[in-house]
Image (cartoon, rainbow, N blue to C red; front, side, top):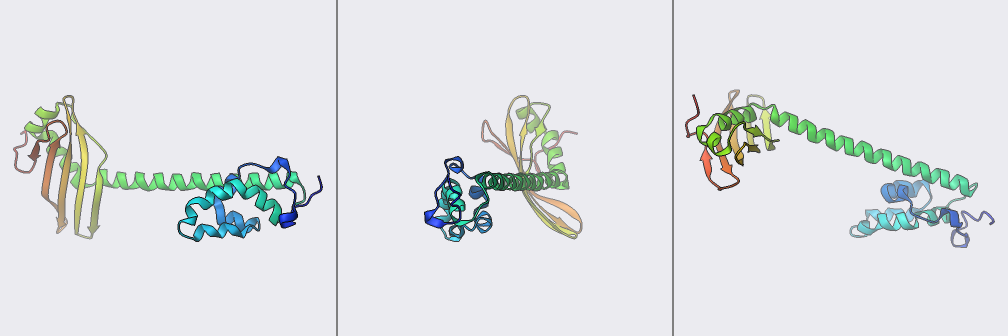
Length: 205
């Protein structure tokens, strides 16, 4: 078959290049610039951008062949494979960045004095230890801790589980003159729904 790439609607599409294009699907407008397929900029239009990546994935090879002159089918396939690798590489980097952010936030929360003090409160309280059973394991905290010099605020929660049952600890605190002051520290049983104020109930001595 004659190489008719770059001739627009007159170009004949080789059977070898038909199929899904992952580079076009993931990189859409960037891929569009590199392949003279400027219809890819429709991804910036609200609602259209919901379906355009799928359209690009399905029609990308055809459009790229029609819109740009290629030396050969083999060259076309080689370049499109590179686009796919670049797309997958960016996805891996993005996933690692998100995982790193999540890990960093989690590590910060778990190392906070508010979390550590709350774990001590729930694991030393005779009522919660009786309900949960020992040993008591604490889960990953979620919520927010904000610190600005010697002041700050915290609103977090974390799961706890013992040999008998499980529950959640809810914590609200503020930092004043460099010291964290607990405003609320309550345990709620998953099984009974019972709430226990860890600040007023006596801890084990």
